[in-house]
Image (cartoon, rainbow, N blue to C red; front, side, top):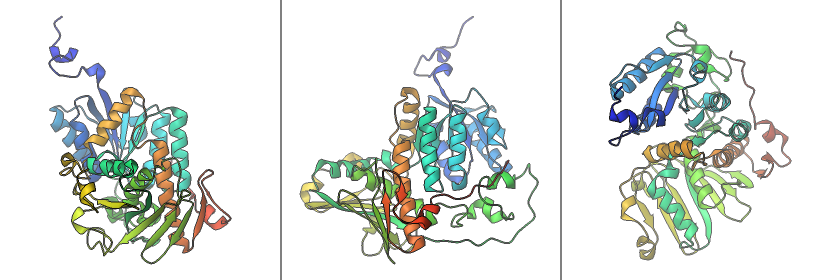
Length: 409
């Protein structure tokens, strides 16, 4: 028998036995962006897609099969069937927020490594459970907070760590203006299950009647489906970067105080974090932000200087001395590029080493966001115990650390 050279991994090809097999759970616009980057990795092979909507499943298969020039990608309406496959090593989870934690934990228990889009859990309790499950199962986990792997953000954090800003005292994280919508859209006739499995779409979220707008992406902003009054849409990225800059990946702020324009958080080390509400998601930044830097800006301020950076890849600094520290290589890299973050995940799948957005990083940065959101919802200052991850002397806030989950099977 004569084997082709590519089967043995010669000529730069990756042998099939060395490839990481990938399954996809939930495929929409964001997942398509993530998956397109992953398809470009020669040591990764996407073999299956699960989604409750037939149209999305089919579109995903077209994308994958066209890339590989085959018709091999298998489709599932119930992601548990995908998880039952022993030949799948890892999963990309990009459902709506309501499913992220539950699907991730089921995947880990099925022996899969997990890359989960953010926000990774709807509540403080789910973020805790997710981190504990990943640690207990020894699975590799990457939160989809991709800016941890983008050069201009990495460089900004490194400058904060270097001491070149002086002693860090204030950080600014841009977030959406929070919303709290508990209304329902008018009920409509649900389509056949094969077309869209409404019960599975809802999953652990409370029941409500079907409306086509939900399944076409208009679920955002509704409390039952969304995370932290929409604060985590950007906060999962920007607060995460501030946690990192403050070398606080293993903790959270100890107090959260809301106002009309933002939420002020204080760390035990005295550093202040201000979650600044943006007037519109992609519009006016207000007086605090340098608009040209793009979406998801963060600012780090020390007693000897400041820097600000955002998704357009550029960084503004307070002095020529700091400007000389900037690397030209970071200048044109966009914050929405997911390639390096995906690479970090798959490298960690091979090495079994923690990813840059591992379970503990996710747990603390997400819980910081959730605690800030609860201070805004309750309209009062909250004191938090990072060691036990509970609010101090506030039963109402502690009850809101969790939500009842619907039985969906």
